[in-house]
Structure formats: structure tokens, C-alpha cells
Length: 588
Ligand SMILES: Nc1ncnc2c1ncn2[C@@H]1O[C@H](COP(=O)(O)OP(=O)(O)OP(=O)(O)O)[C@@H](O)[C@H]1O
Ligand SMILES: [Mg+2]
Image (cartoon, rainbow, N blue to C red; front, side):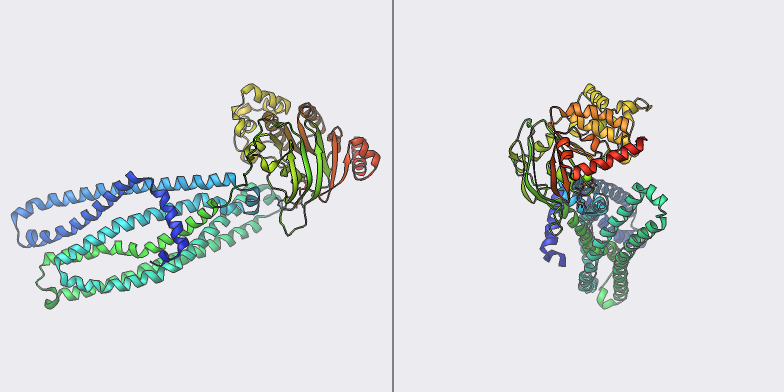
């Protein structure tokens, strides 16, 4: 087989086997069942000879008596072995699917943020669904073909040789032709299979976007655009599938024609005294039956390369993901509870090395328990800066220190366990409000702690009104809550974590002034004994910060307290005056 020569294909195949091998006992049952199937089917064909010669022609009474029982036994055997094969192979196939799926999912949990943000989710999602199914189907198919079909062919050949060696010679001529076909038809397959996987991913992507963005689609009249997008990717999928079907169907058709010619040859030879020797009708029928029995298995063996290629193409893209490096977690330093001194030293960072830096030479220090506000225009790098502390991304140069230790030297999970965080785009999971509050490691919190956090974040205010209270499910990404409610749940979650460092990225931006002020009080109380990074456009919320830094285009252009900065009369002062006059205008 040509695939055997390619080391990468062989590597993929070897790894797939590792998912099958643990199921040795079930595997053994499957092998026995498949062997039994082949034997029983051979037996059925073999019985044709005595059926014809002894029962129908010679009317041998003894044979007439056992013949019906033999056939019943054979069919019962066929039923049992077929059932056992199906069940055991199905069991193995589903286990392979589950294990692969879990391995891929585990990888999704630990992939670097950069990888996840630069790859579309559609193809990643389809790996979890389409690819794992493909792989398992391929594995069970290949196993079936290799064992059951191979044995069936062997049994058929044995019967043919037993019934008439001379006729069998005729059949032999066909085999090299078939082998040649396998080579030619197998090649096209892998190419199409890979493309089909890609296009399935695109279909998933477009569909997901239409569902989650349905309001935008509706108001901006995106129906046609989205439909076109779907038609385009679906068309690609359809064409690749058709090519695949065509190459498979032509393989089937060609082999059938060849078999037809073979059968014609055998019938011709059977009528020829010099070739058939002295063939009885029963022997001929048995021979013919064996040949027909061989037909399906041979066709599947012919196709095995295609099935194998498809599984390998699907497996290859799964293993590529599984082999992606995890987030770098080489630090070993573990702090039970950090004090919370945060220092940035000449930190520069860009998302893509070829782009202009998003942060340039950023340096500042926050003492433990103090607060720092980061302000600046949209796109100035505030969120980026805050994301470097929990190491969503690593700085390109410079150092970030937590209690004087570089964040890279911390064990990643330990570092993150010390940081609590309300992100700018609120992420809620499709679960109850309670589980969203007590998300992740927080599920070990007591009910009273949850209530306390819900109280402080003013989650209680709206939960009271809900018929299911804390059990209310929030929908995909929390769509069933209002923006401000989502934000309050996120704040409650961050409060509940009770970590020494708190990052608030526009944490109260969706709240009205009154709610914001109330939550602000709760937050300020909380900020007294922990280090806080506050990012806010509304400057009234950062006035009380111990230190304010103003970012402009990734650089710190000013820093100091609210008063100091007003006195300097620079960026901050002008931002402040602008907002202040807006607020005055709103009030009047
Ligand atoms: N995940 C990302 N991948 C690539 N580039 C990004 C990513 N996130 C942000 N950027 C780019 O980095 C720059 C800074 O973005 P950042 O989100 O840090 O700004 P920000 O100050 O938080 O803005 P805003 O006030 O609007 O939230 C922007 O130019 C943005 O295009
Ligand atoms: Mg931001």
C-alpha cells in the first residue's frame, strides 16, 4: 500500500492505534466474532455442494435429514457472530471517539490565548464533532476489513481450491489487476478528505456567527450576505464531497466490471471439459458461491486505502491540535498568598511581531493593597496591559514582577489563583446565575459566601425579581440578562474569588450612574486591602485611585494622583474637563 511509505501517515496511524489498543478484551471478542463470521459464511457456501449433489440430484435420504438443521445452525451462527462483531466494534469505536474528543478538549483548555485568538472557532469546533467521528469510523472499518473480510476471502479461496483448483487458476489472473486499481484510486482520496474537513469547519463557523449575531443580521439586513456566505462554503463542501463520492463510485464500478468479466470467464471455463475436469453441479455451485462471497469483501479491501486515508486525514488534523504547545508554564515559584506588589519594568509588547508595538517601555509600580487606574483613549493598550499580568500574553521585553518575582517564574496556576478579574467583554456561561457566580474553583464556596458576593455586587437586586432566583439559567453567553446584570454577575464572581489582586476592566461601564455609584462603594471597600488595577473611561470612577497612569498609543504619558494630574494640566486634565462639561450638560 502506498500509504505505508509515508512516515507521517504511518505516525498518524500508529497514534490512532494507541487509542484502540487499550480495549484488548473487547478487541479479542471482536476478532473472534469476525473470524466466526468468516467461517460461518464459508460453511454456508460449502454446504451448497452436498445440498445440490446429495439432496437434489442423488436424493440421499441421510443428507436430506441433516441438511435443514445444518442451514438453521449456520444462520443462527451468522446472526450471533454478526451481532457480536457489531457490538464490540461499536464499543471500541465509541471509546476511541470519546477519548480523542477529550484529548482535543483538554488541549483547548490549555492552548495559549494567542493560538485561540488567531484561529477561527469553526474548524476548531468541527474537530470535536466531525473529525473524531471520521477517525473512529475509519478505524472500525479498517479493522473489520482487515480481519473479517480478509478471512472471508481466505475461506472463499480455500473452498474454490477445494472444489476446483483448475477453475481457481482462472480467478488468479484477476488479482494483479485489482492490486493496480488500489494504487490508482487510493491517491485521490486523501486530498478530498482533507478539504471536506476544512469546509465543514467553515460551515460551522458561518452558522455559529449567524446564530449568535442574529440581531445584527436582522437590523443591518445581513440575510443575503450571510446566505451567500453559507452557499459559498456549503458549495465548496458539496463539490469536495461529490469528488469523493465520484472517486469511490468509480472504484466500485470498475471493480464490478472486472468481476463481471471474471464471472463470465468462470462460466465459460466451467463449460469447457478440459478446464473444469470432472466438475459436479454441486461443486460448481459451491465454487461459484465462494466467488460471489468474495466479491463484497474484496471490494471493501480495495476501498480500504480510501477509508484509511480519510481516517488519517481526520486524525492528522486532530493530532496537529493535540501536539500544539501548551501555554508556557515553566515557572516553579509558588506563593500561598501574594502580598500584591505589582511592578512593570520597561515592558514592551506587540500582538504580531511585524506590527507596531501596542505597549512601549511601560514602567510603573503599585504597592501592595494600593490601587492604580489606567486611563487613555480607546485602543491605547489598557486591556492589553492588564492582560499581561495574568500572562494571557507574555511581554516581548521588560519584566513584570509580582512581589518582586517575575510573573514567568510563578507556576501559572498559582499566579492566576492570586488574580481576580472582570473583563471588558463579560463572559457568562450557559448555566445558572449561582454557578456563574461560583464559577470554576469557586464552586467550593459556601452558600453564604455566594450570597455575600451577590449582595455586594448588587446581583441580589435583580435575582429577587426572577421566579427561579439564583437557579435562573442565563442563556448562551448570558444573553437572557441585561448588559448591566451580566456585568454585576461578573463583578460578583470576581469578588467571590477574593484574590489579593483585582483587575477591573471597564467593570461598571454598562451601569447607570446610581447603580455604578453603589457598586463603586462596594468595590472601594474591597479595594482597601488588595492591589487593584482599574481601567475606566468614566474618570469619575478613578478619581480616588492612589495613582493614575495615562496611556497614549501604548506609552505612559502622564502619571500621578487625580489632583497632581489636574495641576499638570495635560492629557488627563483635558480628558477630565471634557467629561466634566458633558456631565454638567447632561444634568442641566
Ligand atoms: N487579541 C488581539 N490580537 C491582536 N491585536 C489586538 C488584540 N487585542 C487588541 N489588539 C490591538 O491592540 C491595540 C490595543 O488594544 P486594547 O484592547 O489594549 O485597547 P484598550 O486601551 O483596552 O481600548 P478600549 O478602551 O477600547 O478598550 C489595539 O490597536 C488593538 O487593535
Ligand atoms: Mg480595553
